[in-house]
Amino acid sequence: MKKIILLLTCLFTTTLMLAQFEGSKQIFESPKLVQLAAEHKTVAILPFKASISYKRLPKNFDAQTNRDEERKLGSNLQSGMYTYLLRKSDDYTVAVQDIERTNVLLKQSEVYDKIDEMTPDALAKILGVDAVIKCGYAYEKTSSEGLALAKTLLIGFGTGKVASGEMTMNLYNGTDGGLLWRFYKEMNEDVMSSANAVMERMMRKVGRNFPYQVKK
Image (cartoon, rainbow, N blue to C red; front, side, top):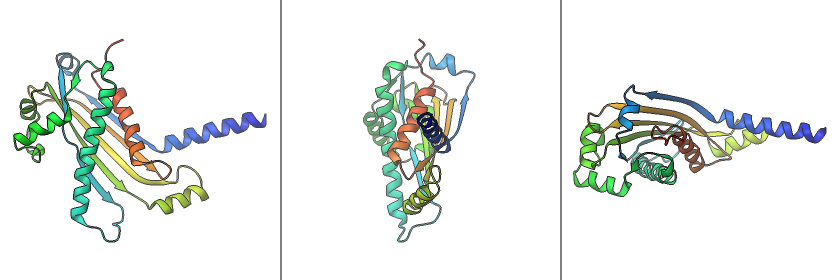
């Protein structure tokens, strides 16, 4: 009996911990999504627009270094999403353009750093794809790892939050630039996890809701 109670307690604690570190999810689907998505063959993932902020600025904060880290994070997220969708390619009805090709074409057209100044249909024309995926990721450091770890050890799981992430993913039709699908997700980073683990969980959420699912 004691073993059963202990097992149930562990399961409850794990479920509670995961629930506390899962944020809200919002999805928008255009009435034209099903019709237009069925016509798409290739989509491109644009470089992420990433931001890194702090609830309290750390000592020796350098704005240029932070901008460099944001750029690196945006590139890593683009690569991470491409890799994840590539692994799941058999589950989707479209092919995802190689991000190296995507980035080279954007740079050749001198718009790599001007994506926000371009319409989605113009970008799709440059890239030669049927749709483009445009993402933003806001990462906020909310607590020091030492303080979060102390809270976890003294109070328990669910109190060790060190950062939060918010991802917005927009899918635009390449012909007219219309918004077909929008996915928004919040997720927290625990002191016992890592930024990569959070991103992997985020990608799994995206993968399960991606609008190009093969019908089985």
